[in-house]
Length: 141
Image (cartoon, rainbow, N blue to C red; front, side):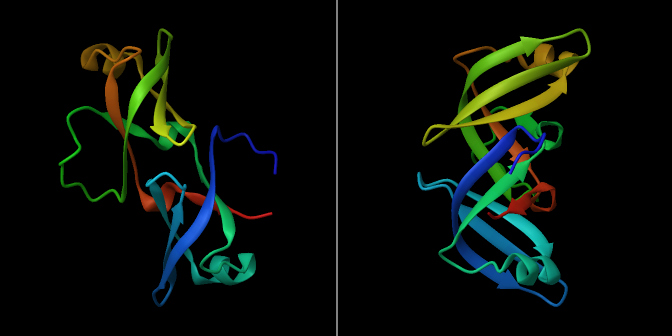
């Protein structure tokens, strides 16, 4: 699977909760971190998703919001992943921030330069990556 999205996390489907139209699919990355996706029932069936199978959670870097001091925050976003900042590439408009989220996984976020500056994001610091379950695409091979 070759795609342009930078964040591709391979794991195991740990749960599938079906509703009338959509299903919530949790993918365990194996290090205590789980990513939740909301996809249609049709997608679950077309992909043959089942608990215990291998799948990938895919998130575009521009769908990720970064925050600090949010570990105990109550947000509607299903995915709040804490990590350590491992790289910051600043540009005049946008800044790319890489966050080590454990288990050898690095998540990339692209945020505005102004937000990065205001938050004081720097290598070695900590932050939380936040993204909605509806922003997560599921892939299988």
